Length: 410
Ligand code: ASP
Image 1 (cartoon, rainbow, N blue to C red):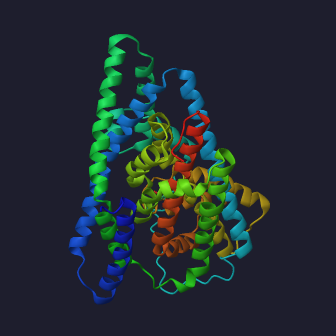
Image 2 (image 1 turned 180 degrees about the vertical axis):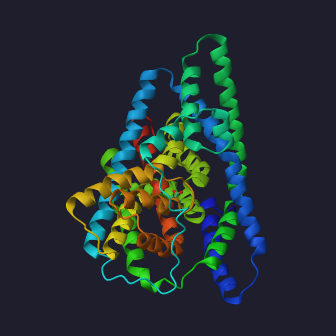
Image 3 (image 1 turned 45 degrees about the vertical axis):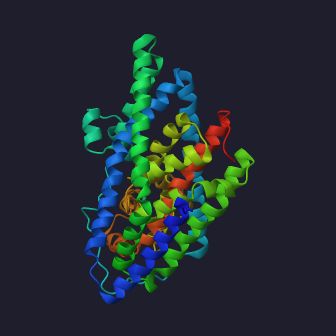
């Protein structure tokens, strides 16, 4: 009997954590494990650009008229905003109740965050327009600029969708075939997931900087608590509200993608798996899957949004800064923008926190120093936020698929 993939992944995770503890304590060389982890991440990244391009063009070309694309777009943006906003409210509430920053003393030997890395872009909206509309779509694809690639793919997919006659038919069939090929390749890469997860977690546990842990445990618990509330209460409640279905069925269907997000800390590396689970296990159409998920992986980040809000307020509390209603309102809005702008890669959320800090006038050396401390414990938090990020994308896809009259598997 063959063990289901999610069980294999779970075994890989547990083995990875245990083996990481062993190598950490024995000083065993993990060079070859690092090689496997890097190789696996490279394979995932190898499929992302063609997967996004082919799936969106194929999906959008199949939607047909512009009105349907507009309707799907409006629902998708509606979901992104609603779910991220709810996540921010959870973070805001917890940080005000727990107040993790009060009385915080900087641990001795804390390294400030490199200001180069901490540089927030001048205007996030300007940045968004630049990221969204590529001057050269091929260049965007070559440089891995995902938002630009998505935008171009939607446009060309819409054009192919309205083409009539044999040329339109030919292109639609061709892209359909290309999409099948890339899904096949993705399936092969995903078969390596248990091994990849094992290697990634061994390395993470082996390298984890836990020396500063006690100092900052309240902060970590606040973020982790907020993520847990959003993951276990808010998203299931939204799912039930919109779909009248048992949320557990959805979570079960997404298990492998969640485990992968947890192990890779990257929504974009997880995207092939998220798409596979939503299409095959949740049962959403390719049209909805390829519209909602690739964009969601880069734009809709509930866990990151929660973190931007709670993390910035933690810094403000620790530095004894003003926390009036207006300040908190600014934090809420900029946290939403920062989560939209954050790249779907490890620790991108922490870099974007400077946008929030800048908006409330806290872009100071003390704040950099605190961000440095936060960076040293960011990995485990990032693992949880990435899991929350992709879960929200998948719930959105299910809700939207149902609203389009699709019949799901649960
Ligand atoms: N690692 C997260 C993701 O890829 C982004 C973040 O750092 O919050 O979804």
